[in-house]
Image 1 (cartoon, rainbow, N blue to C red):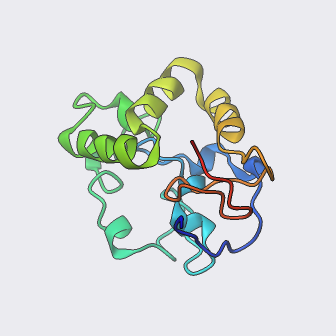
Image 2 (image 1 turned 60 degrees about the horizontal axis):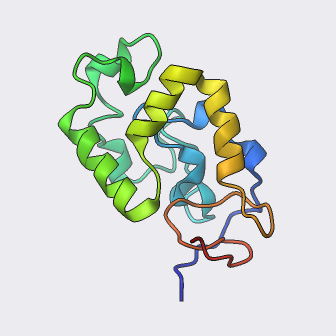
Length: 147
């Protein structure tokens, strides 16, 4: 049986916006902490309220170099991709069918608006249209299992 989360409300892909794309390339709108009703995290670029200790301590989110970058994304850093981002990317590619490095490269190549539009399409459930959680292998609304 797939892991299920209790969504805080039925989210549609249209809620995804540039403000939900983390500096590391994670789409925070797909994160379990954003989708579930328990914490109500508003993403890495929002304030600290609702964030877990691990999110608050994230070395990428707290990177001093990143604070001075023009775009606010790791892809503009001279050390891109840093060892922390590489490890994070391997874990997400292996477990959650997404790559933060690919996301950042797409943002750099096509722009944030184009990237967000493609994410809205990619992460919509083909059965019910709800926004999916990257951390769960099935739709949190209808149970559709991802291939």
